[in-house]
Length: 241
Ligand SMILES: [Mg+2]
Image (cartoon, rainbow, N blue to C red; front, side, top):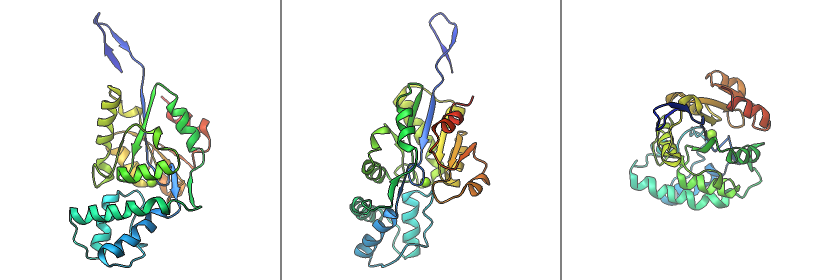
């Protein structure tokens, strides 16, 4: 980035990199906690007993997921119903996260700690979770404090619309702009790749969620990793010019 200085000369200032992390299937896996936390309030609030296994969850925002459930089961799609159901879901979520399948994915704490220690790098969240759910999930695993800000399902129903919110908060947080080729969207689904492309960012797809490497490759991310267990491989990609 070129910065103007008092003498009128231009100096090359420090190049800043922004990492925007997805949560589910990228940082953690919840062992089915999300879907199990959605079932009881559906019954308690709306009298509907459903497995919800026909709902498209991966890479979708909570708001979009709720809308799918409402449409499928004939529930009026109102803001009041959304907020009631959200409260019911969030009340159940902490207990459901106490299951042996809820884990941090390989290599994640090492990378988050290394990123946090680098002054040339800012990391934040770009997730389909509402902020309260993101906080519950990441606090459960001791990861919440790595992220000073984020873009969430509170900001937009569709993931492709979340990028500008993340960039706006990144500017507010750091006081600087990030060149699109120094912004990385890291996620586990084609929706993460599309969302990165929508803001001209680089995209790192990780095959630790619902999509294998071959399925992610079909969507042409900037790079793909089978998982995040090799820090050297990760930083080679992120720091490539
Ligand atoms: Mg995900």
